[in-house]
Image 1 (cartoon, one colour):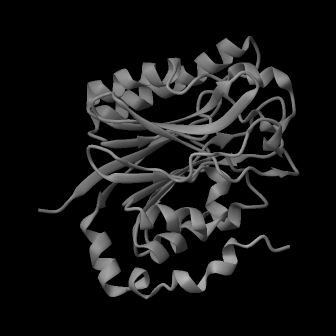
Image 2: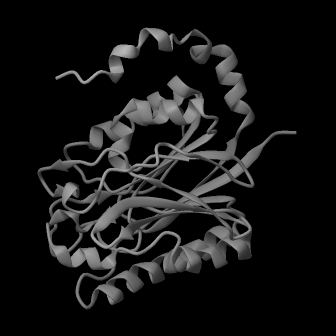
Image 3: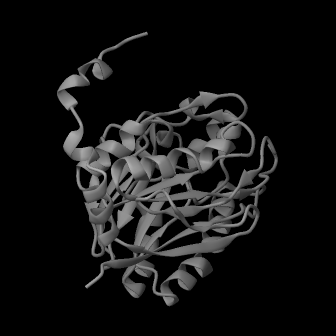
Length: 289
């Protein structure tokens, strides 16, 4: 019997930029809740939210005030959304700004299983600090949990966050550890990296024989407006074929049915894991210029 898993992204526009930090966070959570409900009612089994889903992409500036939006994981937001996971028997990937302790913060994605239980978290490994407007080293400590694979009720999944997608080692490690679907919650704007959006990850899906879901927010975010988040969230199969693609500018649910039996079919045809020679790649672990 085919193993078909219905997966979805929520790509959303930030609705509020003024007011207190609590009000800004709550406005974005309230934007997501109807879409989470929509996903549940449509039978989505694994749902992925966008990078730091509960607010704007504040890395467009360097201001200590945004440290105040960080929270523990698990914590209030993951606990809150766990109720929806349990209600709809739906796995939810929840990317948030994590406070590990006072003054130590991570860009993190928590995983809630279909019974509402907390499975664990992934912390963003590679942290960019580039012009224009990606001043992430000001906010995030590099992740220290490696690349965990989560055995959910429906599939084994792996997560790598936004900038991690530019490092093919991320997808390879997760696939070797048994992940069937990789999720990449992101916040990326038109211009510098857009041409890579549908180039890198379909290629990585083929190289590793996995499904990949890439998620991006939408719109210009005030007051910075340093670039337009172009949405275009998608799912790609192990052959590199786009299964579904979201709009560039619309807050919406983007869903697809993934036939996990296709993984074996593709890997039996392309024996990349059989033919790889890790003993010959030791130089990649050396500190070269």
